[in-house]
Length: 284
Image 1 (cartoon, helix red, strand yellow):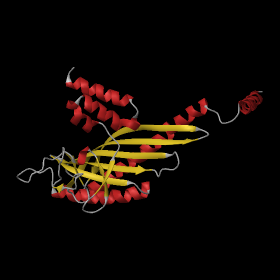
Image 2 (tube, rainbow, N blue to C red):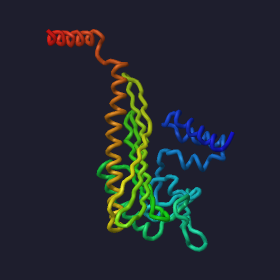
Image 3 (cartoon, one colour):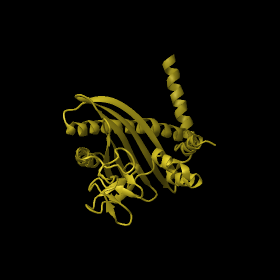
Image 4 (cartoon, one colour):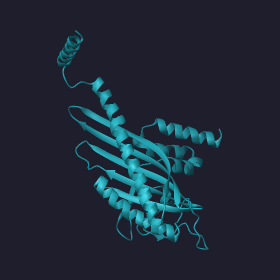
């Protein structure tokens, strides 16, 4: 079987399995087909893990975009850190050049300054919208601009049998033009909810949603990029939250309501009779 066919079938299998255990399923597939490791890790969104910056003591999120082998770059210090406690520059060759976008990429001085401002801005955004959680922003260079990812994670405080996790992953590209910039934004939300009681039983609800948008916005200076990216992410999250609430949760509520009624059958039949009587009286 060709390598491309294996990759496509692996993605198709992961789409059919329970999103709640995507990390377990992914590791199982990688152990069976090690040659797909890099492609799968770069293509499959996993639950965001949290680490603590060894230099600043602040939490940050781990993903493939700030990874260099077994090390991850902290957005607060700009240094790569590994699980053994070591730190380093990462992503820089012997001549001091970085490789732009890609594994272990380190942004240029200009892009790093924008990354610092973006982390400060989204830290405020996280506190206002999520009232907790962790946020991280990573930028890297492109030939005609720059790209980056905005990560947001909120874990609900566990109570009895209830728990939940929200992961937002917003990957964007900004291509510089004369007085404007062309932005491409791809957003993915991974949601996992679990609740239960002795009376109603247990319920698990997990899944993911991906949306894409492209637009041109005016740019006066580097700060304009932060404003534009913030607006794009804010609007996208608002739209996706509304979709989840109105479409997905609404549909699930309707299905559960049709399958399982809280009221007794006698009361339901009585309500239907009243309803039909009102319709008949209006038609006379």
